[in-house]
Length: 370
Image 1 (cartoon, rainbow, N blue to C red):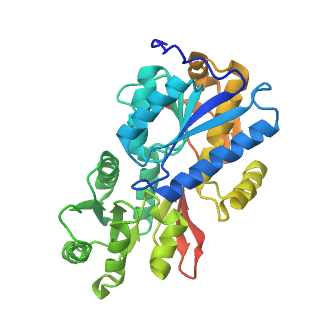
Image 2: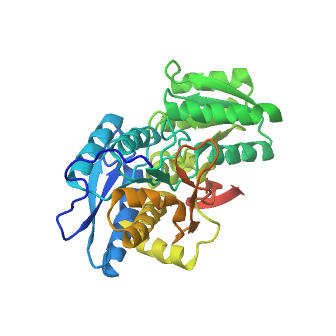
Image 3: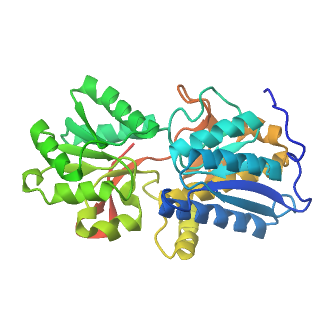
């Protein structure tokens, strides 16, 4: 592995703690609720590591930086955290932001365990420095496409905003569905108001609309418009990126929040470890933890295991990705080289398609598993 030159402080902490840098969206336009869940998982795991004597007797410290869904801000945070001497980076939820962070981490020779971002091309070229827990977008979204076909939906519209992430999702769906008789019609949300979307859905005779747009807006306005249009009473709305996962979705949409299938990365039944962590996360969040909170916990569990065995040396940490074998909250975590993926990848965390139950919108129904 080629090791880039490190800044003078790169291998230092203050002598008493081992530091992990954490990238988390905690302010708008970042998805704040996702960031709060991710941070809760990270912090819970750090507390448990320290309760169990830390990293070979040294406390583990989380140095948190808010990315606010801004790639440039994230890249600057990576530079700062590298200068502060963190042993590794953790976190990030937004794929486009994680991509910027991964590029800087790769350039600086700083190990980065990405918690939640799913974009396949997390780095332009293969790297030894970056590993990922979340499934690649191509894996999860193909499972979602299987769900669409299995429920009789082959004529699908996507309401899309411009971004690498949304464009990648639309391409995955189109490439997977087309050979199986499916059609994907793209609606450009730069030019369409939410009410105009309804006319397009009628004109194209689609049976499913997928939200490839930001949360809360324009996703919430699109749902309200479609739900209120009597011509579209039979249409299914879907959100593969997971907008309905968080409580804010139900708060903003009420009954309209239900029956909108999305991707979630949890097993059907949690292991004893997962169940224990769920209880602790629920107490910390004062709400049911999302899969993102479990991703945060698992990230620190992996990094703590590596740091205990390898010390805080960055190159040794990166070299250890293929030897990781850690019990996570959602299964045994191991990294491998996966075709088409440029980073070390856990292949794969469990994938579910779920929705909120119309009879009880705070309860989730598992509709499909991959």
